[in-house]
Image 1 (cartoon, rainbow, N blue to C red):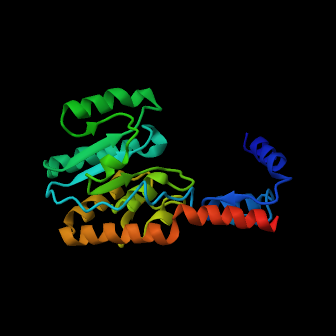
Image 2 (spheres, helix red, strand yellow):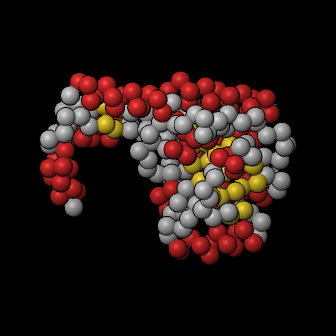
Image 3 (cartoon, rainbow, N blue to C red):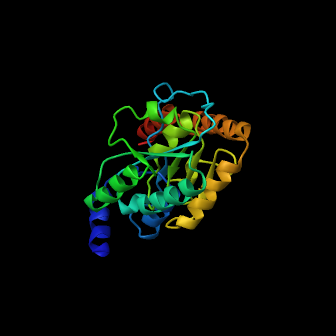
Amino acid sequence: MSRIILVMYKIAICKSNTVFFQNDKNRLFFKEHRIVKEGYILPGSGVNLDEHKFEEYPQDENLKFLFIGRIMKNKGIDEFLGCATYIKKRYPSICFDMLGDFDEERYRSKVEKLQKDGVINYYGQQDDVHSFIKTHHATILPTYHEGLSNVLLESASAGRPVIATDIPGCKEAFDDGVTGIGFKPKSQESLIRAVENFISLPYERKRQMGIAAREKIVREFDRKIVIKAYLNAMKLN
């Protein structure tokens, strides 16, 4: 199957003047398999800085964590729910909220049970994600694979620290210890340590992480940067 897909990529891309990638791991994979000669790296789809504007950090002392994503194994839902269950036992006042639809129905009963038990709050799929981001202290994304995560970019743009897997497609969106905290993929224990690390930080440190997160997005992921890269490529070709 992999060989067939590689051949299909070669056929699809062979006449392209320019190929854009959202992370360097994907670019190197295509280069090593001689699908492209080089390829350009873009900062994802970029962020609309006006739509995802900076929001003042919540002053509520009871921390609120937010998960945004399709509810499926590859988004790290097992690790997120396991972490929430563990943390709530130690810190009952901490809140874990979830946004997103079920891509894998087998998780519905588990989410419903944990909501009934008061471990998480599930809000389903939402059109206005920004209104949730601004009321939370950090966004958690335990995903296994990403091109470049819009969830992390949009959360950081609003001035929120992120807690995310240290993988291509995520690690580009935050500076570990400065704008967010990274952890090992597919590891509930590593996620728990990252969340407890964040909990232990003084309020002002958390707030400053959010400010630094916004500054990083403005500097590196403004949608205007992406548009300019496309226009420059068109001029060259």
